[in-house]
Image (cartoon, one colour):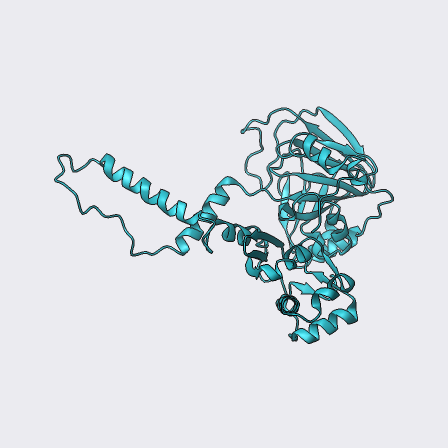
Length: 403
């Protein structure tokens, strides 16, 4: 099983993963000069513009000026001719989930393996000419900002942000007032880590591309709402409030303490039953499926022709490498009698003999045949592994080539 790195990481400016998590993660910002030495931007502005024209790509064009109103937002897909109409300054193009379209970014994401992968959201690319920005704002999640091309000035403010300090009636949460307490200019290869809730303001100084590695942070309301939806899905509608021991009421308009307590008990009982991890439909199973759901539906494409296990093993040997689909999320939860493997909101329950497959599949993006060949040889558990790998291939979760 893969273990978190303990040696100093160049990505973290020579800090160990342990020291970074203890001293900076969700606590304070960190500027890392030359975090990725010799970094070469894997995408051009024209290629990002091309992605913004695709219907399946989530993109936004933000104009600080020259729109119908300040900070105007246009959601993709954008028409190709739209880019010829843009002003020379003060606009930004944002492309979400770039790791799906640029294999090089998968290697970048692997540098953050010291953080649980279920927390990773995506890599967003931001392209801007001089003056381009999305305004001063704050995010409710951790982000690493890697300067990929050109130069960007970042300002941060450690002052508390008042709830009313935002411009009204905008698609963006832009601060009305922003007072910088620190400022840096990032060059290609430099990186800035920002914890949640820290106000920041980035402005392109020249033609500029920034890659943002963001991390998922489900809101408490989202967790509760989705879990309640899950509880209700399996609830027996015939179960209802009952009061067979009801006595005559002196005040018919009053909701009695006994009635209120019974309703509290009903809700508490339902939630306790649903949170029982010993149940196959309990919280663990629900959470694994919830947290591996992808943003967009129907993005994983199954292969044109399905394979039998023997064919898959031969294909694997011929290609020497298989890959996780970047359109699906992988995670697992260990049980006493096996492992639950979660992919794209689905659960694959693996026996103890097959439990080795979960970390093998989840802890890496690329699957070299040399590491898998022993697990694919004859034997009951190995045969089961070949069947599992074949099922994942036939679902489109395992592919022969990255995008």
